[in-house]
Length: 195
Image (cartoon, rainbow, N blue to C red; front, side):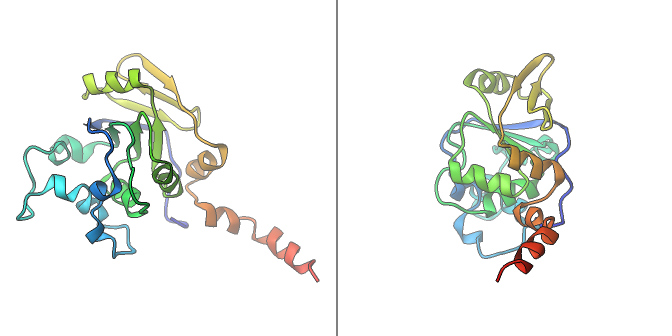
C-alpha cells in the first residue's frame, strides 16, 4: 500500500449480501491465482468459482454479477468470514472489486488483520444488525471511521470498534511501513546515538 492509497473517508455506499457462513479465503480468491504480487486486476478473480461457470462465463445466479454489485462499496457476509489459510490476496481482490468495507458478525483473526493492513475495513456487527441488513439489501450504508459509527437504512445506527493504530493508518491512507518511514528522522537519530 505504501504511498498509493488515500485515507478512508466517510463511506456512503450500497451493499451486496452473501448470507453464507464460513466463507474461506480459497472461496474469496482461489489458490491457483496466488502467483501474482500485483493487486490490480485481482477484482476480476474475486469469488471466481462462484461467479463463473466451467467455461469462464459469468453466472446469472451469482449476486456479485449484478450491475448493482459492480457499484456497491460494502459486502455483507455471513459469520466467520475469511476463515481458512492466510492470504493477503483475499483483501486485495475484495478491494480491487470495489469494496471499501466488509460487514459480518465475526471474522477470522488473520483475515481481519490482513484487511486492516491493506486498507479494507472489516466491521463486526451484531446478529440483529446483520439480520436487518439481510432483510433490507437495498438499504444504503454509511460508515464513519472517524466516529466509528455504522448507519443503515432510514434510522439504523450502531457503533463499532477498531484498534486506534489501525484506525489512524486507515484514516491517513498509510500502512505500517509508511508509519515507520514517517519517523525516519527519529530512527536515524537513535541509530546515530548507538555505539
